[in-house]
Amino acid sequence: MHVQAKMLAALYGATALIALVFTWWHIPEYLGAGFVEANKLFWKDALFNSHAAGRFLVADVLILAFACSLWMLVEGRRLKMRFLYAYIAGGIVVAISVAFPLFMAVRTLKLAENVSREEGAALHVIDLAVLALLAGITLAASVVML
Image (cartoon, rainbow, N blue to C red):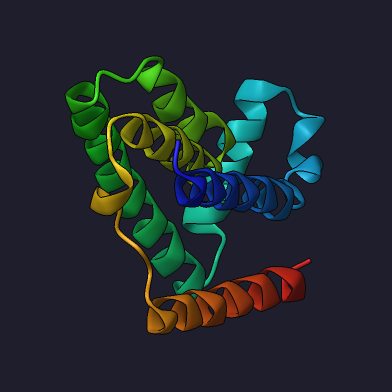
């Protein structure tokens, strides 16, 4: 298996871990209510007790989660990946920002099994610079919200 695929899969895995920490940092105040009641309280806060910017982000993430779930199912079926509904359920119960990178890690490794070194797409320096900038902005915003 190509080293670049392993590194990319590891980066996806690290992204999922970071997403888990930063999303679930905000969950403990809901956990004492039990699973069903906690979900009701969480969604009530997210949808009705937040300001316009918060509601914008909720709508944006929900629509993106649907698009990601659709793509995960289509792409997962195409590649004959296993446990597709675990990613969908994970996106609903844990966070789409955790489930989607995990799916991408597994997809990357699955594709690497059948791709020769010449067929692999390499990132350019500008790609890495843009990704580093986006990662920095995302981490900074996540830390500010702690």
